[in-house]
Image: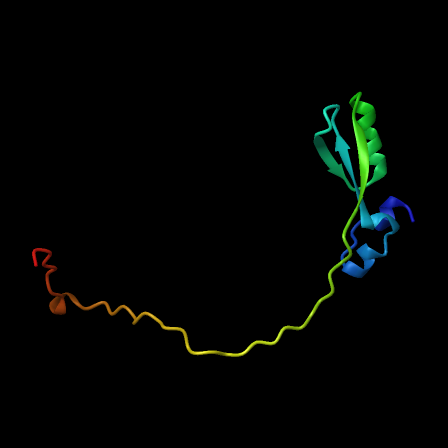
Length: 99
């Protein structure tokens, strides 16, 4: 499969069908700090060739977690604030803060 035919994978099944999708490549600078992460070994090699002293490591992705069904129950109704009633001007009372 060439790269142009693998572009635009839209479903998880198609993405998982790729051979190299279970690993990624971490490029390290000459101090051993992470410089970047790549999805292909070719990209990691290219970056290492551009920067002398850079190396890369291969990391395996963890297995895809399984989907589980979780049950739920409806409990007590949450307490709600009463609705704000905006009174017409004729029913409003002045606010007295000197109580």
